[in-house]
Image (cartoon, rainbow, N blue to C red):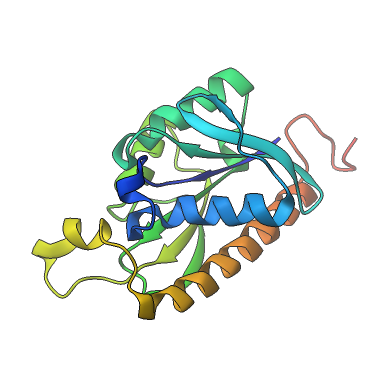
Length: 189
């Protein structure tokens, strides 16, 4: 099974903040594919369904961003999920607002939710879809900036980015599905 974790912070005060771009992306995926996020467990709200012809579990951890790895680790233990089949959706201050990039493996670039997942899973070998939220002018303003809501002028840009994220997730799932899984021969048997 493939799995998607959207990173963010729980609670209504964080609902439409920049740091919750991953949650917003999961909500859009769920809506687009008729997946109900109606289960609780593994420190997350989650649901399962099909995306791009693949069985997928999608989740929003209920830990705060900096502890997202707690949920990721729980999913690997309770559902036997492979980190290499994981797609993490998260905000990225080093990308301009609305820009979306894919990445596999490597460091966290300072994104603490990704750092937590790397630490708790003991690997960096998972997929990421980075959602650009832009950067404040002063480094001293980063915390307030990521916890602020998108402005009315920024909403159109972030909505386009979220549509792009959904497309990137489908691309990754198709690529993963085409790869032989562990235990399969070259012919997929």
